[in-house]
Length: 401
Image 1: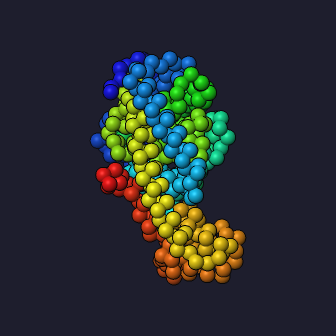
Image 2: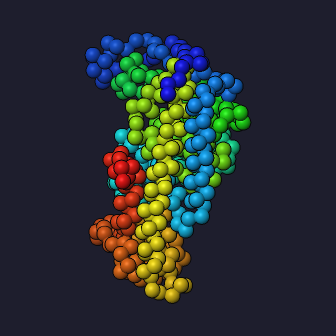
Image 3: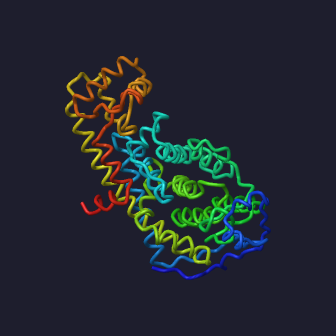
């Protein structure tokens, strides 16, 4: 189902471009020749009061998707394990893959308990922190809330601009030297605060369904590009925040980015079409992604439930023994060390090592790591499920099974 332009296309303004002569001397001559005194920067359309016409077939699909998501959310509220923790990590990994930032789920989980994880894993763990920040913040969207999400995302990168609205021009594609060959140049920095005010005003509308509202807010945020870096991942975190705010995901989360990752070209094309004044393709893409995310979430829940149930039924210790708490803890954090277990269970580190030995005996975890990194324990069965819902190849296998 394709849309048609019902809004004006983005307009552009001529903005000045100047570089320090000393910096220019370092730019290849072939690139310097393409730099002129001005460039074209986008002027986003105000969204807060813009009318939207949704065709009946798409409206029906969104209604059905809302019902599917709501049923899934209620089912997970009754689950005996923390599926949101699993899907949050998978959502973050998939969102980062869209930006060509990859790491294994094991290393991402490691980065949440140890600073010795590989750098990519630490950066993606920042996405996990940003998602948690997005979902934990008060429902109302504000510029300050958006900044806090971005700050949590960028913290592992050790950059100085986390949470800071940009004061310079950024661009997508082209070269790193100037916006002249860019695929898209977002608005100049002076326009960004006003654009964000409009975005916040749009988030308070009550005349749009939750999927359309989330999709359009996401597309508008990507158009504004209010930060120096990390806009894509922040924008996809906002998708989940809006769905939570609209009451669609009250108890759990869904790997919406995994659905977008499955058809990257269509997702990117939908954002381009949005710039051309056609809002329907991005709504269709988010609807597609939610439909797929429910399937992914249900399959992941079933697989984890089977594993956790088998572990629980094999435990012979008395019901008050701390080993009974390990299955749920491992669903939340599938790579642990004794310090983490001690802290979470409120026991001594020596007692935590005893619990981990028992967990090894039941096949829940196995020891890994080395002397330099320290002894770690990983739940291979859970990591395998999480990898399946976090990569494109894994998603294909899961959907075919």
